Structures are given as C-alpha cells and as structure tokens.
Image 1 (cartoon, one colour):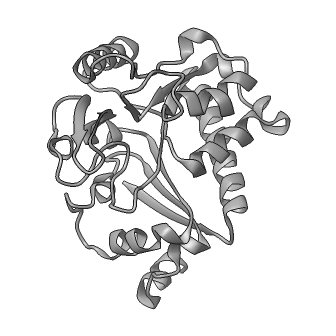
Image 2 (spheres, one colour):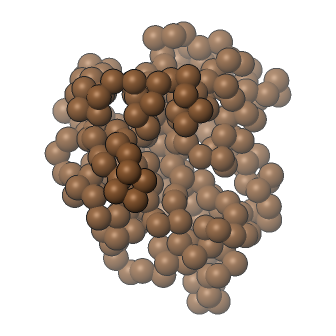
Length: 251
C-alpha cells in the first residue's frame, strides 16, 4: 500500500484538488480498462465534490458512458428521502450529467436491510464477474467516532471478512444501514478519504497517531493492499496534530 497525505489551506482548495484527482483517476482507469468503477460516499464535503464534477468546466472532461457509480453505504430510506445518500448524489451530480441509467448502481434503501444486502452483493458479483470486486476508486468520509461508510465501532460489520456487503444496526443512531465491508474497501486500486473541518481534528489526530489499525477506529483499518490511500484534508482538520506527526506529513 502507498499512503499519501495531502493538506490544503481551506475547504475550497480541498474540494478543487479532490475533484481534479477524481477526474484524473477516472481517465486513467478508462485508458487502462475501458471503464471506471467508482464508489461514492455521503457527507457534506463529498457533496461539494459532486457539485463541482457536475459544473460546466469539469463534467465534459469525463466520459460518463464509461463510468459506473456505486455507493459505499446507504440508509434504509426511499431514494427520494432527504437522508438518502443516493438522493444527494442525484441532486448534485446525476441530474447534471449524461450517464446511462444502467451505469448507476444504488443500494435500495426502500426494502429491508437483509434484502438490500443480498441484492447489492449479487449486483457486485454480476458486474465484476469475480470472486471479489476491485474498484478503481473509492471515496470515503469519516465520522467523529472514527466510522467510515457504515462501518461503526463496536458493530459486527467491522469484523466481517467474507461478505462484500452487510446490513448493520447502529445502536447510537437506532437505525439500520447497508454497507460495503473492509475486504472490498481494501481491494480497491485507489481510496480517497475526504475530511474537512475542525470537528474532525480530534479523530484525525487519533488515527494519525496510532501505530496499528484499531477496530474501535474503523477508518484506520482501511489500507488497500495493492493500492493507493489518499488522505485529503483541509487545515482545520489537522489543527490538533502534534509537531512530530506534522514532520511526517509535511516533509
């Protein structure tokens, strides 16, 4: 695994840099394989990246006919619900680009978690035609508790080693979700963690300080075996990182 840490002076520059990285990664995957498989994340900072991808100056730089979109996780709500990760991507990106309907592979939040999990796992198997899906690019956020996708601390989903998607009950939120699992995240060619804001500075300090991945910090367990891991951060997200770590981050 190759790990790259990028820090930007503000959220705007972070979003621009991430958008450029996504476009370059798409182009490289299409050039090498004829298509690009991407997993999208929910959250406010990814939302801004999707909006920028949909802008006139960016969207025409991508051959959307060759891009397949997936989701890292979904809440168990209908696609038109305000909490739906799919709806957020639809409003910010899908409504503004020309992408074939068959290239958009959502998790169906309007059915039971168990049904949605089986359906999504079958979809992944049918699309990748392999024992394990390998995404070209996975976008991820991180919660203040260290969760990523819907891999929350102290849930069985973090322990899953075989299934590609699982249903998970999140006690703290009293809700069910469907999420991709660590084996899928760690099989990717490229993973981008997208983190901004001072509210994330404590968890970033904790993750950057530990020597070994820890189950109580699921995001720390994302380490693509044969891929590149990017941490894309703004300056507010790293304000608590001590001098020693900064010397590693900013050689």
